[in-house]
Image (cartoon, rainbow, N blue to C red):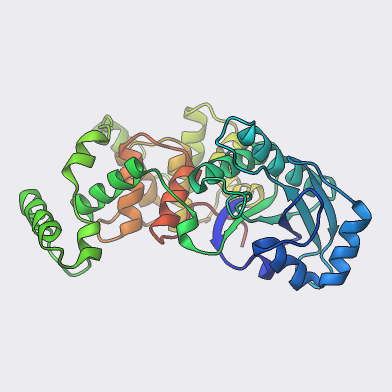
Length: 349
């Protein structure tokens, strides 16, 4: 997929370039910076950086990758967090865009970023993540490239407490473990209160209903499709239905596949029609890109032989966003990553 959050060691990424969270003097540092220098060959990378000399905050420079799997290292200098009123958001976004532009100029097809400035520079992780996603998604609207945001631990992706609580509440109301029968809502809430009161099984209780969160962010109800709509298109294939919906929504092909986080080559296969059958995650990504209602999403999935199941935590999280009217696939993927679920989108196999 064009943009993916992955849990990995950035020095092991086999992309055309990896990004070093550098300091203005381009000297070896600690954390991600130190690990990259060590993996690339300390003396060789230090010599290349010394030859460049300096890089200003919000900018980026490029060197060879030397002993790294990546061909290049792009050194991007993020801002030190000073409370947020010293132009930090603009500088951090510029940092990402500068690195991406360097990759584009060198005709690179893939690049891996760390979460810049979120380490010793003190940038709050939630704000750092938001800046990264904003810059990368903006770049991908106009450019084709595989971009990875690499985090070493899952806790680096931080959702707002309100969103996290709302998703957990929705999971508690709708998620049904495999081979179990769903409890009535009142029973689930009583069980949740008992767990919270006794402190028993805290991991399970964490995912049960939180009524106050549900009331503060209740999903919006979407209009159901008519019977005529269901019957009229019974014989459509997945590809035919998808292409019809793209036209009905007045979307261009580029707008659609960018919103779906799928690459151009894969969309070309879909456009050709025929016997193409997507993976379930690709089919869901298409529904999200089209801003379909829950019923419409189920209709589209059924054309590829899939459905949304309350025994799948991933499906329940996706259902939450659809019901809430949120169709930003990057925001959905942040939530899926935080809950250790597979992300939406795809690239050509």
